[in-house]
Image 1 (cartoon, rainbow, N blue to C red):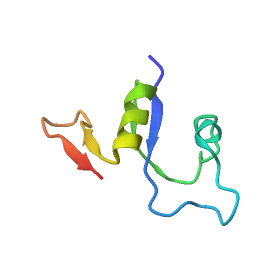
Image 2: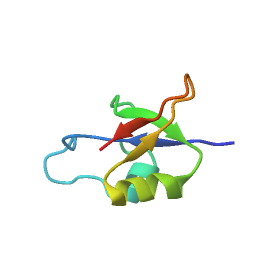
Image 3: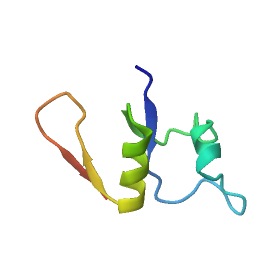
Image 4: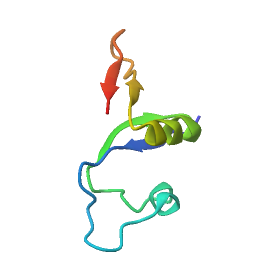
Amino acid sequence: MPYSVIQFIAKPPCDEDCPDRQAIYDGALEGLGLALGYSASRIDNFIMEVQGSGFVHFGDNDQLEYFA
């Protein structure tokens, strides 16, 4: 199953022309070290982005991590 990257950034890595969502999905931020986790669902990524927060399970234990 393909995974998509969940990317949380405190400050965009650009000055004026920040990439839009489609450009990010197409890899505009790859190689910048911004990926914190992976998801099998782009809709889950989108909902978390719209909500501004959510819980992530990394699979290494039984804990959920809160991201905001």
